Image 1: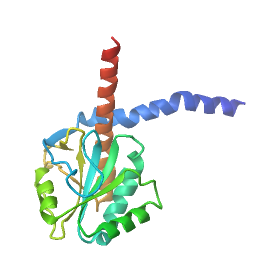
Image 2 (image 1 turned 90 degrees about the vertical axis):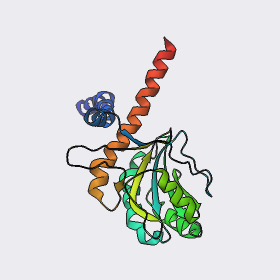
Image 3 (image 1 turned 120 degrees about the horizontal axis):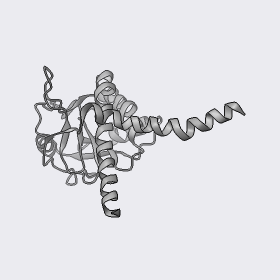
Length: 212
């Protein structure tokens, strides 16, 4: 009986506090996630069924040979997507060249053995479309010759690129290196928490104002 009593207390009191700290810790440490670029192009003009509007989106570029980028995709899937995909306004969008549709389907099937892939989307464009879209991010990074990059980016619901501005000796962080598990764990996880918390706090505030 005593054990059951403690379990009930944990469920009723401890878990809600842990859930709160999950979001609040990031907000306390960093405040709002900085807007680095405004007016990022949407991907609705590319082949596929995805849009950034009204979604918090992690964007990646896997290039003409996504099978060579399986490690990047796996890291993002395990460290970021798997952790946050159940939030209804969160999604992944991978921008890929036309002609890689079959490779993308195979990758999605492989990653789907680990988690539900319903929020992992692919869009396909020609080289100019992909380069134009990447240019709209307005970063200090460049696409590789195969139209890939190891970096993943966070786009908010208003089509702004979010990240970290220059802080001390660290340069502005436009994207997160998917080859680095430590960068995903130590930086990107926190930043996704912050932006999710930001929107949820705004939603609660708006709801409270309407009830007054």
